[in-house]
Length: 110
View (cartoon, rainbow, N blue to C red):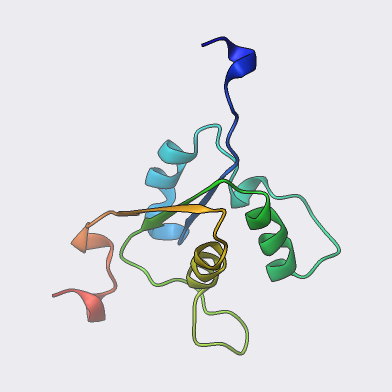
């Protein structure tokens, strides 16, 4: 297949930051991810929703942390991104679990 015939997919990579830093860097490579977002006049969630509406594939990287809670909510930013992606029938969701017990907070280690 010629390069011109190949479809280029928009991919959104989501994860908590600190515990998944190395894995995210490996997976992201040249993919479009949160660290590449430009400043915008939109609220953070409006901007994320806009990006997700332009996304073909949403990649969720799960590690040992739940992540930072959104203001006034009981869910993390990563959880909210996942819910937005899942609600869009045009977005394919791929989830990967990285089971590294040493990355879990002490109260969540079992």
